[in-house]
Length: 381
Ligand code: SAH
Image (cartoon, rainbow, N blue to C red; front, side, top):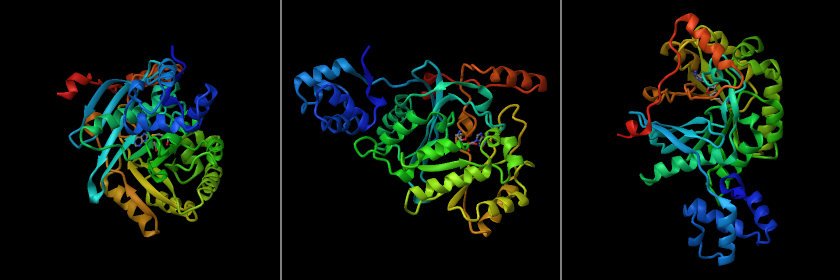
């Protein structure tokens, strides 16, 4: 068993690890360039290191990546992977290429936990319960896998969103360390504006982000008032909207430049999609530097929610835009491969029994649960 997985360490940690073993600090940058820029992980090829150091590295450092279990490519270009991570569980990651309006993006939606503890009522991950945190290497590994896939096209991941399975801020240190690597020029070198942590609103953790990272922040708001938000996002009972907005303001100010918050708002028919909700939202966000992402609800079996008509979605968007908000409508991608947001139905081994309760509920309601994921060989063809 080697001491350390290379993908678990940010630059500071790698430097400390090397220095502890009697090596010079600048070796960390050298190593990172080999691994992240040249994609070389065979120490014997690292010709600017001494033979003795290479031998020591070969003994001490591994490059363990999650194992790809399934891959599915959508007709619209979206790619979904199911990967087995360190703990033996599977999580999902989705690559969303965007060539529209002269944009040239490859956004990767990464998972940060196996399942989720939060149980937001409209989220399918929430229905699976929770089975543990991903390590930094599990998160970085998702990016490495997507980059290897894109390398065939001469492309790379350009944007990262922590919008896969899990609540990133309940897995704080591994997520922060991964974020360091994503934004480090000696690793992935992605701009801080293009690395977005999405949270249901873990207030103390947002406070802890201040001074620790300058990644972008997205808040899953989904409702303009506490009674409704507490129904949709139970975490709101612990950290109500005013506390959440206040700490978000502090975070954005801490970034010290013209950065803005992203507000995510999943539109559910007859729940939070009235004009009155749009107006209340506009009032709530009056003094918040933000852009609003509207996500039409993605249905899954037994959810109990429905997607509003396009007319209602447009009406909601127009109301916000008329009040001066930059508002994006997130189009559904990867529908044919179940890669849409909130549809990341994996095979989480639930330690909370939530999955069983939910399945029972669906059985009682007579709705089909679960989806079959095809093995990678079937999908690659
Ligand atoms: N725990 C993080 C990441 C969750 S997934 C968070 O709460 O932000 C990213 C986004 O997808 C969140 O805004 C989440 O609320 C939203 N989402 C979850 N299920 C959805 C569904 N069925 N349809 C549309 N959006 C959904």
